[in-house]
Length: 353
Image (cartoon, rainbow, N blue to C red; front, side, top):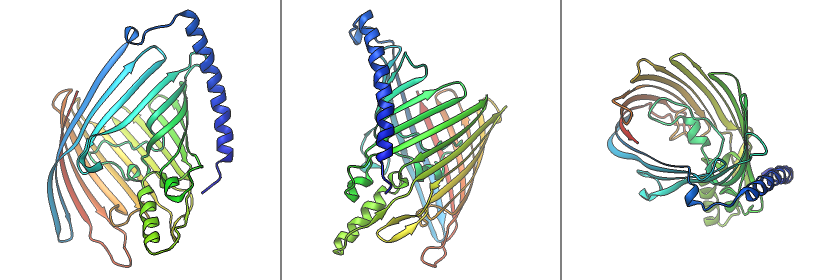
C-alpha cells in the first residue's frame, strides 16, 4: 500500500478552501433570511426502473436458461434550494446482497455560490472512476473491475471545457489488512474540447478497493485458517476513456486496470480490462450496438480474455423498451487447462418512469 500522507495534506488544503467558501455562502444566506426546509422545496422527483430478462448460455457441454427480475430501482431526488440538493436510490438486483433491497446510493450536494461550478458531495457515492459507456444489455468488463461505491466526501468542479473531481473514502480492503488509518482516494479529470467529444482520466489509490476487495478478504481468511499471516501490497488503479458523438453514431473506448502488480498473500497479478462500444441510432426508436472487449489476469474463470457482442433496443414509447443481445467470449487458460468458448443470448424488457 502506498503512503497517504501527501493525500491527507492535499485533501486538508482543498477542504479548507471549500470550508471557507461554504462559510462565506452560509453567512450571506443567513444574513438574507432563514428558511423552513419544507416550505422552500423547489423540486421533488421520483424515478424508477424495472428490468426483466430471459437468457440462454452455452459453454462447452454446459447449458443454462433463466428468467430473472434483474433490476428494481427507485430514485428519489430533492432540490431544497438552488444550491442544496439530496438524492437516494433503492436497488434490488436478483442474486445480489442476498436478494435484499439496499440503499444503493445516498448523496447530499452543496453548490458553492462564491466559486462558480464548485460543489461538495457527501454520502454513499459511486466514485468517478470509470465511464462504463455501453448501448448493450450487459455491463462492460471495465465496470466489472472498476465500479466502486462507498461512503465518501468529495469536491467537484465543472466548467464548459473541463471537469475535475476528488474524493476520499475509508475503503474495505483496509478493514481486512488492519490498515484502517489509511484513507483511499479517487481523482478524475474530464476534458471537453468541443461538443460531442470528451476525454477522461482517473486514478484510484488501490485498484483492489473496486472488484477485488472480496478476493483480498477470502485470501486472508484462508491464510488465517492455515495458521499463517496474510500479506498484501495493492496497486494504483488507472482509467482512461474517450467518447465521440457524431450524428447518429456514438463510439466509446475505455481502458481500466492496475498500474503495477497486486500481491495478495504471495500471489501476484496485474488485472486490466478494456472495451470499445459502438452505437447507432438507426431511427427514433431503434438503436443498434456492438462491443469488443477483453480482460487479462482478472478472474479468468469468469471474465473472458476476449469478448464480442452485438445487440439492439426497440423503444415502444418513453417508458417501455425491448432489448436483445448476443455475446461470444473466449477465455484464457486456468492452471494450464484451456476453457471452452461461451455463447450468451439475452432478451430484456425494461419499464422506466
